[in-house]
Amino acid sequence: MSFASRPGAGAGSPASTSVLVVEDEPAIATAVARRLSAEGWQVETVGDGLQAVDAAARLSPDVVVLDVMLPGIDGLEVCRRIQADRPVPVLMLTARDDETDMLIGLGVGADDYMTKPFSMRELVARVKALLRRQQRAALAAELAAGAPEAEPPVAVGDVVIDRAQRRVHRAGEEVHLTPTEFDLLLALAASPRTVLTRERLLAEVWDWVDASGTRTVDSHVKALRRKLGADLIRTVHGVGYALEPAGASAGGGPA
Image 1 (tube, rainbow, N blue to C red):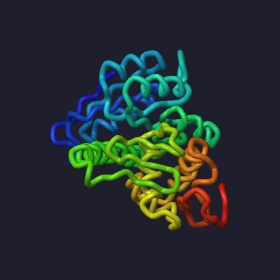
Image 2: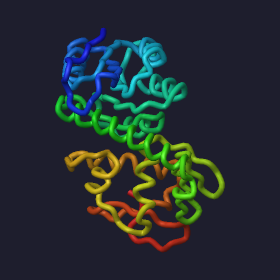
Image 3: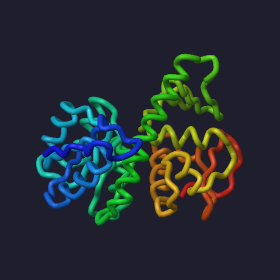
Image 4: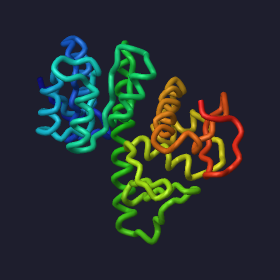
């Protein structure tokens, strides 16, 4: 099912922007698609996992809103397959407020998640944030590639972050990160040993001003620790996180 955008709708959101909604509950799928199309975006909905993989390959959407529980293949496998084909921002929808499920989703390439029931206003805000970050990352990579001498890699201890190529190495080994994980690591690396609050990270990485998303920060930090090592990011309980070069003394600890 496709929903066309309204002419002139969604200031700052060109009609060429496309969103794929993957949801097997028709009432939810229709409500989400209508709300997103009201922002000026082209929206298509599908109701099962195999259709989602085909639609993603056919449409090359700018963002995918993806339910976890689907007939055919589940949302985690859908996310894994579409990310292998062409990296795309994915917002996962889950009926369970289970951090394990959330971490698994992040591990297969999701950028963000929301728990049902959710606010349509928040859904739109999160999709807009994904689009802004995608555009910003593409522009930064283009500028860095055009002037590599002005964008040297960021080195923090044995971690090297190549901004132009958006690649990360630790101790000489490449570590594959999702776009959100990369942006979070880069934000922390900009001020090593400095504690950044969850609210600041939400604003810088996710473009959010709503502190209700702090659990999103926590889950992404845990995902980074699983990939880069638990010793790299220090927790200051009740405040936020700091990136610690290897071998640096640290109070607090992983959470």
